[in-house]
Length: 231
Image (cartoon, rainbow, N blue to C red; front, side, top):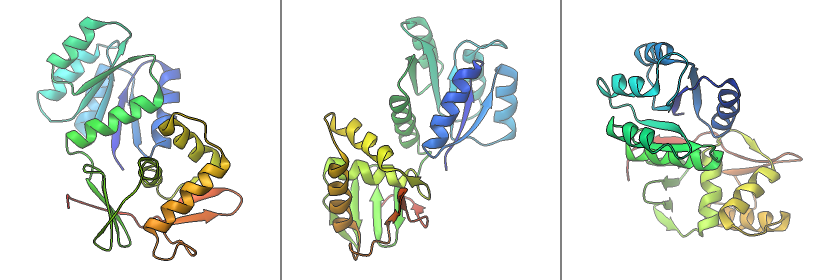
């Protein structure tokens, strides 16, 4: 589980964003100002720093400069919309990316995962039973043989992998498919995609061991997912 330090002094943003990130499987710690942020970085190991530019105590630029002077911790700045100066300054200080407020939670999560992959802060290969998923090459193999998944099937599998051990409702899964497809999808569509995915990744699709049905609640991924290096 990747650990993120969120440095933001707006309590509403902290609460909402923390909930989103935790729901996506991240561990989240928070700091409201420059002093607390630097203290947290000294005391704990983080995989990514999500940093607001404007802080009541100090500013994000000073935090980024101090962090980059002593570590390779990836930084994503949260900036006011249209604030070109902040964007340029942040990148010049070594930040990996920025996102403008207000932002869409899904876009932010996507940018976070992209930075983590680029910086080697997340494992490239996930394994469950004889299934291996290389998230860098988007390559899925089962028993050493490649599984050819459609874009939506792969997106659905990644969603399960990013929420291992959690029970995902059909509504949550439908929203994920809808977001990926960009078109109308319904409950029957989800049933079809789950069936097709199981046929490709399960040894016995009629008795699934990887994507399991939780009667009356939804689905869950078996929790014995292992992480390793590149294939």
